[in-house]
Length: 338
Image (cartoon, rainbow, N blue to C red):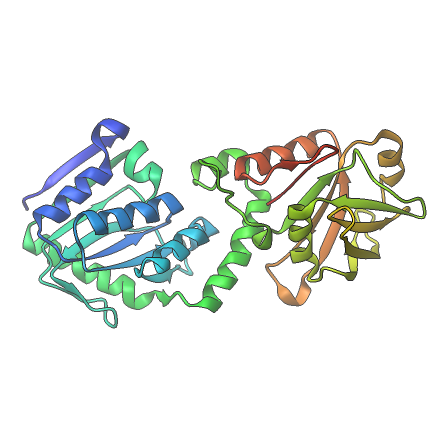
């Protein structure tokens, strides 16, 4: 079988460039892509390949195993009219990475007419996989190889699920739940950390919000103020911008806490009862942070929780917000969400 086995070592031999050359050599008009996981930058690279090679159709099968594919990557592809399906595997993980090009692609069946090129290898369609990592791949314009790969694409396409609004919404819940427990190092390796000025997690997509306790008001209750963006995140978690929510605290008790927006200082305020653990400490020291989280993974058992953190706990949530581009500050406090 004629083709090229290539070992890519980052910037000098980028896999992205080799794949794009292969598409051009095969004179493909349509391309099918399968990636175990997909990052936002990877989605942008797919679109760039489409425009540079003047492709008429691209269809992408993205793996959802482990909630590593970024929801924004899926939304980006849909926004540039690239058809997307989502794949998983009940007995393990969905892990293939390949591309096949041809004359035409049928969205209903996943069939690619006159397959003319293909790539299969270790690299996911991510910034790291296509441009930075050491990856190995086989690229060819041989018709027999392309036909076999086209059959594999059709199989993946037919066994994947059309990415509709409901599926994307459910996946977003799982994705943001996973972010809670991912380390800073994992966020960077999975390309979930910020690489530019944009935030990775919008206030309306978060599962956790926090605010520093350097400043507060109230004696009968511990009135914690949230700057506007953090307040928007809190409103997402509570499901209301003005009202009362039942919130579980670290002592296992569920307490009713009032929440409202105050136009006089453009702040949201959560009234935390004085008997919540560590409130006395926060009052005395003007330190730490109030962290509010919600479990979106199970709507029927969704529970809002709150705790005051300090020391290493505070440093960890600050680092995570900084990595995600959601760390903010006012003259009196820091805040963030993820």
